[in-house]
Image (cartoon, rainbow, N blue to C red):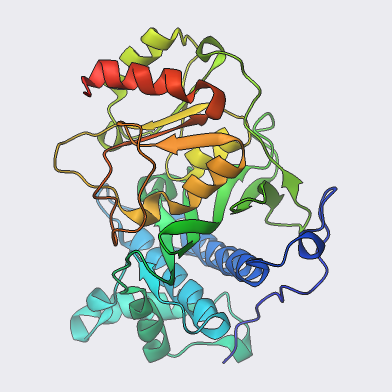
Length: 356
């Protein structure tokens, strides 16, 4: 069994930019990550069509997103194992709930839907799927290379047919070097919400940020909107208030003179949205003193924002520290915005939250 992986040395048609001829560092990893995220996004779309769009779900039935999580992680981890076999992976899922008789029904769904998007010579056995999922058990740390994967970020968005993302990042010695985010439901053009959907975002540290459709290999450079003051800015917020305090965000917006209605969406699609200029500020404000962010929720978005001309810190103004392990335990909250207004946004956040 071999999943097809796009070779880094193959020609890549882009908009005014041919990545493979201008860049050697992490070019293989970039190509592998693109292929892995696209394949995982395909299986997520298949799960939605089979288990959400065509079935009546109870309010608390999250089984479709569970199937999609497992299937996407199996596909990404298989591609990574074939392409960069020595790189460990930090993944959100493990196969515990798929094991034994108690996991049989869920396991069979994962097996069927995972293989449903693979060609005959790529099919995975049940055991291969379980083994692939469990390759995501690395604990992380400050040394060496590892990948961080969120197979579906934005579970509620996925279930409602809204925004969700497949997020993959390469971390080297605690620094995010490569980030790829696949957003199956995000319009290619924010100004054409009913137009083509399926947007892929790619960034390599020091080499810019790019967007391409799922349907094409043509990449276009992306940048933050060229605003000059916070009064021109728009917030991009989570749909769910439980993920970040909407009331605090409202007070911060008043301090900054922001009057525009926020753009609300789930998942790391928010990082993508601000990076291409749909909105300008993304805040992940702490909702409890004990909550700690997971690295897979922010690694890809962090490098994407930075490469698009933005800045990311926590609410104390510290860079996000991806060297600790599976969490951002040295950070509290997230502030992402255009670099030229970040200090003003940070000051407003600290005033509202009484950060000293």
